[in-house]
Length: 129
Image 1 (cartoon, rainbow, N blue to C red):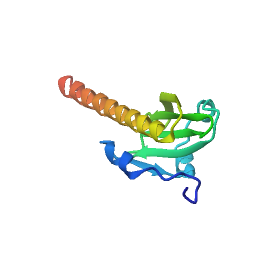
Image 2 (image 1 turned 90 degrees about the vertical axis):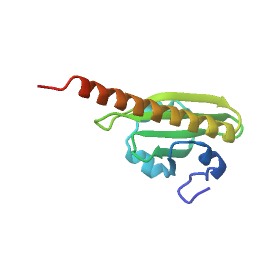
Image 3 (image 1 turned 90 degrees about the horizontal axis):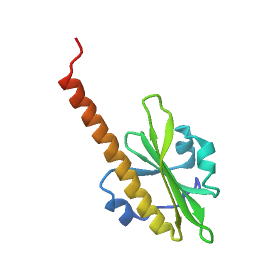
């Protein structure tokens, strides 16, 4: 466990994710001002927090060994407001939860990249007068 309370993710799992995600502290995660009412629905203690390099995809893993693990992936909009895009749960292994979580973070980032690509294409195809 790190001094700020975060657990140390296993490097092999982080390397498997194709997109760059960074393990961050609870304080840095809270600085994104995620919707805490939604995160409280996880009903257990958050133990790990992550962000992509841009900071528009953030997430947390929550749980306890005896109760299982769950996670939330959130996407930020242009105004800096975050909304849940994926909730996962019922995982009895932190390692399995982290693996699924990182795959869902990767999927969220790919979806954002695709939306940005389509938006650029739309702008090129329909330039404003």
